[in-house]
Length: 357
Image (cartoon, rainbow, N blue to C red; front, top):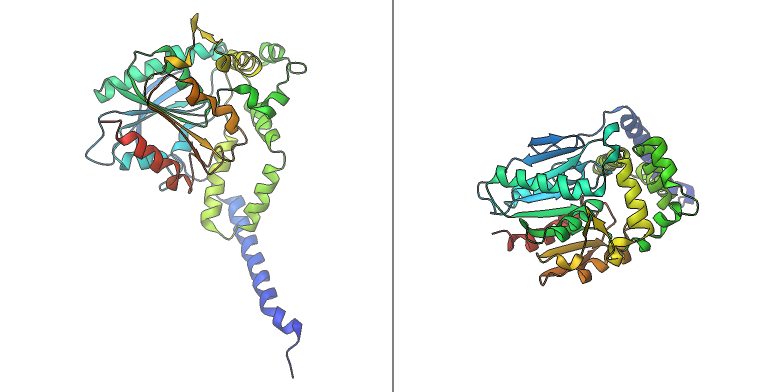
């Protein structure tokens, strides 16, 4: 007697039922377990002032490159995206390659810090951090590496300090032409968005508003992510990575009110950086004043900083030694996670190593 079609299908049905049971068990563990540990690479806080914390990571090898690296995070997020977990940490990777790594991390601005402007970050926090890196490392030269709006702040610093101690400038997903950030323009349309009323009312911009604005860039993204999580619930490595990225995304920081007002009006609405009309502290910002070696890494699938928004940077700066690289990945996965170790991090090491002696 020939077996029926139902008989052939039984093993597949049993396997799917077993997988569904395992996913439910893993789902319960997911809901009841503690948040994943992040930022585990040993470090020391060498300075703290208000919203700023400056960390020095303890070396992992005996021989170090001469030039230390100062990483600058965007003020909206915590810097542990650079140090998610062992094996998924840009900081750990650089330390193992022999770099002396410092990181500017941000804390939630206090109510009295609502008056912080872009000038405070570019003309105070970054120069002060560089001085402290120089003192701590004993080296005059410092490489600065900035991510997203941290890259914008680093670029502004470089343009206003052409004779300063910056040795190299590495940038990741850094916008210059804000008119190309279409979805951000849509929700901050000056015809409907009263930024003055918002800041005058709330002071510092609450993280819930920022979180919602990023969600609007991909309205279905969160739901799709949950579906993907459920489909991979029996994959421990996938779940671990998902939870770390989800935690980082959910732990957004408030933004200093005046910084936000200035960013919306001068960068987003008037596009002054791209037009060469931006002034900070009464000084014009000229990208062509940047003469140090520059690397700018952009992501192919970046929905936050599209390629068109970051592309003008390399063309606009005055460095003879400058390079743009476009790598596979998204805004976050470019710099962090399991694929970054094969793409951005080796590229950064290759570029930086010969310029750090």
